[in-house]
Image (cartoon, rainbow, N blue to C red; front, top):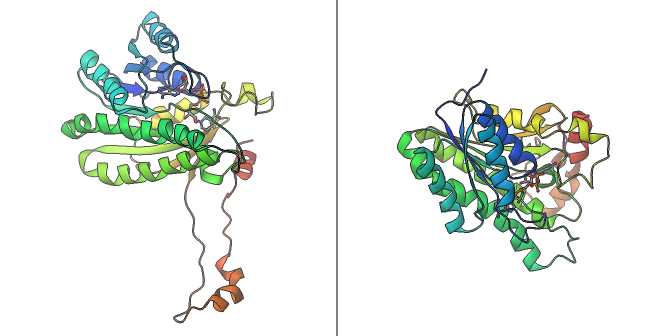
Length: 290
Ligand code: NAI
């Protein structure tokens, strides 16, 4: 059994849904957990200390160790407070699962700048800021595991989610670069693109998904990726319904000329667009999961 005894983990957005499930699994397997959650609505408005406190309490009731916090990960002060909570309570920080997220869906032409910025602030800035605050401790210890939460909507695009897609693909770049830079310090960073039945998706997914696309089926991959034995870094994984698959950016064989002209491009468009048998859309990815 993969265990996390003596490891200290931060899970952001752990008051509900996927984060809650990640926190419970890591705690059950011996990790000391900082349960962070702002406790707001799905669109990020409002705040409550309740959800994080309830999850931390549940962990303690079942014999685990946890502290709760309702800091906003999208601000440097909030992110630093999350990491300080780990160090103050448990003396170190080994694992960061950046999971906190919000939605402000609207079609591209109607989306406001505020809606765009608010979504990037939580997903991209939040993940960057918490990892940034934890990184000096990981560097010092020569050990760290980071998981960022991307999305099929970012990898493949999705109607009404220009802000969210931008944020989620941004996390792929952040993950890949942290994977490269962290290598010399024993820090591994990976990203997941999950599908799970939570408050974020229950109004979008068909009802029969509830029993199959459980949060626990996503947490299993997260636990593997933050374990000592995990060798991979800078990778992205699609996960949902019990299926796990590597996702990668693919480039076709292409077409070249030393004297490339616009007309060459037009005349050789079929070769430029040459396809490989990869999954290229969220629908194909979902079909494979099903
Ligand atoms: P959820 O809404 O249940 O959980 C998100 C949590 O993040 C909430 O508890 C919320 O209070 C917290 N949060 C929001 N803003 C915060 C902030 N500034 N600071 C701290 N906490 C904050 O939704 P779910 O589905 O569990 O989502 C978890 C992550 O997985 C999100 O990043 C989401 O975008 C991502 N995701 C989920 C998918 C799904 O199928 N459920 C699909 C793809 C990605």
